[in-house]
Image (cartoon, rainbow, N blue to C red; front, top):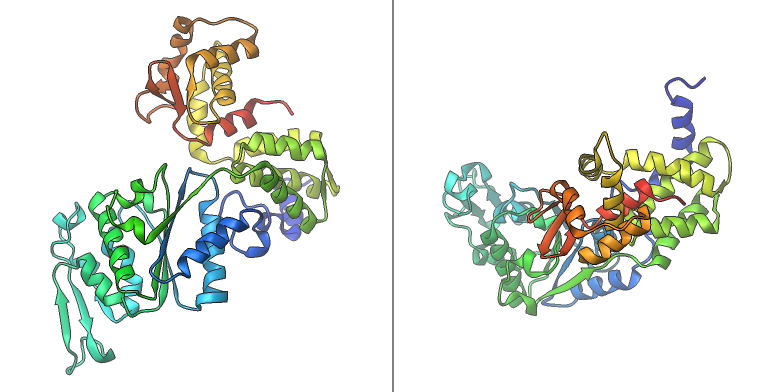
Length: 405
């Protein structure tokens, strides 16, 4: 008896399946990247054009980081052959911390410890950059040091304009200060004006590019925007089929269709469901994924899904006396996959699920827990009788947790 699951893990590890279907991390290599070749090619074109930089944005979970990883890898290794600087932002990052690595590579001493409280709250006061000329360090007796008390975008652009490199700024939506976003946009514009070989790719979660650039008025000329939409059904199917080929297993067509339908355009869920299905057949030493396999895998997928999604869903439907919260959310998921949905369509879908007509007043009894005018609940009220999911991935998760295949 495999009490600790060690034999199961040994089989899974030996198969390499978790390096092929990767729901918990972006795709890292070209041979595991399927679909969207045209988008990759267009961003490479932008970054390989003098004076142009690139912005990639879209909903959470549509595959932005995977696409950016592959794009930068191809661009650096096969075309530009320059240093790559990858900055994955957090809420504590600001304009200078984002440019820290390329600045230091250019001979600039960046002392982030000297930041004052006023800088951390949104200004640049108290932060100094020391630029050492003639390629010597500032602690040498003969060095010439130029110190900038306020490192503005023009200073940063001036320091980087003759450098070759690609700065990949991921999760730019995490940057809290609008002024820092404006400063990044201004630096991009100035690097473009200088015809600098130093390139910048910005990636973040947003509905529009202006959310990332803080609506900088002049950057649109040189920062080419690409909004990454959800994947098409054929693209999601290719993830499953190409991964299956590498593993030497087969997904029956009804299984492929069910995974694509449940994923609703999000590659994260395709990778998650395909992974759990593959693990099941590998552990049982089989080679064909059937609908029975998928039904078993779905339970594991729900438990293994991102914690935030799972917790918010469980909090929303938790009730000792009724399944109605589950029915109401499933109805919303069925009509709410395409952004906004109306109360009328919502009630119609509830009737289809439960077989009972529900009035708006009756629906309102459940909405106190499910709906708010901000992002504190699963669903946001946009106006009278108009709603949307706060996390666009939630409808897919709800369907995975509830739908029969």
